Image 1 (tube, rainbow over the protein chains, first blue to last red):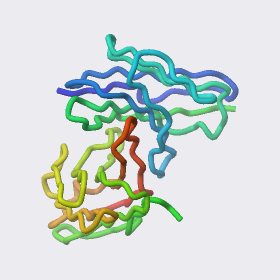
Image 2 (image 1 turned 135 degrees about the horizontal axis):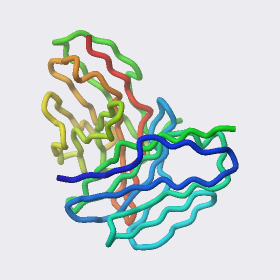
Image 3 (image 1 turned 180 degrees about the vertical axis):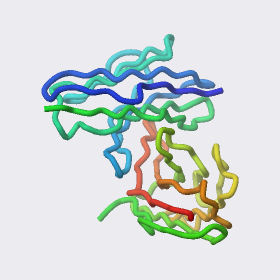
Length: 109
Length: 113
């Protein structure tokens, strides 16, 4: 079966750095997405990786290793508004998006 | 104005009732999707459509049907609602391209009593 694993919940301190991991087992791979979702709101796109390596976008970076079926989202200089769930999703061989359950990130002052 | 809109935003209904959730988009995208989201579970795909004449079942289509009335409109129907269809429903759109990111509507919170 297809599976995406991410931690259920993480806690970090304002101003710090946090890394959210995602491992996947899917039938094929055509890209990996990270989305941010604030409570009760719609998911919004953060990043996309299709090749191995690091993609940096401001305070957020995303890393991919296709051989290991692994990605992480790195958030720097954490702000209170970063408190949200972070969803990892993989496009499989049929170009269907398979979603992880999300990681709830709690930021403390 | 929002690019992807959903109506209603909240709905409470009773078991056995027929319910329609509507989605409209002004992004000009060909691809549209319906998902449901339950606590502790990832987004699960119900149906998707790559153009007006194309409708495809997703992971959990049983108990649901859809209609793609136009490029901009994609409706989800529950013919006879049951309590385990209580969930947050999202419509999304995307445009075929290198990234194909999906843009989500604000969601419809449906409660079936």
